[in-house]
Image 1 (spheres, protein in one colour):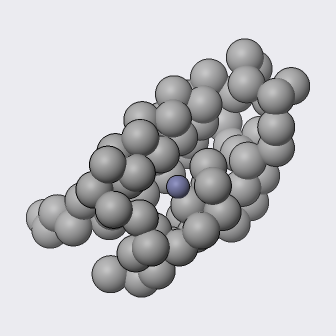
Image 2: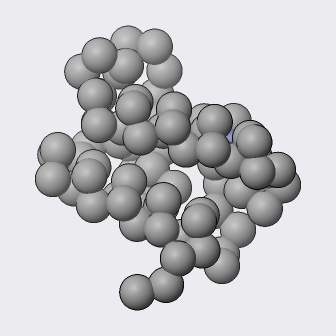
Image 3: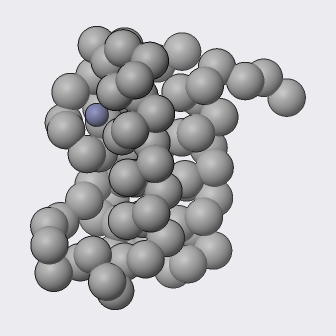
Length: 77
Ligand SMILES: [Zn+2]
Ligand SMILES: [Zn+2]
């Protein structure tokens, strides 16, 4: 697994313990899929394509979220 930068706390995902990982993932999923609600709070860089989450349409955002979750959880197809 690549050491993705956490979009929530800006640290490498491998530096997270299990608790932190699930906390950050939940937050990322929530914020990334509700950009209108959370955009005013902070800018978030997508860990997958390294673009602003606001530059994603909702389909792209969902794809990146799914990809990130898959990588972080280490699930293979
Ligand atoms: Zn984090
Ligand atoms: Zn993305």
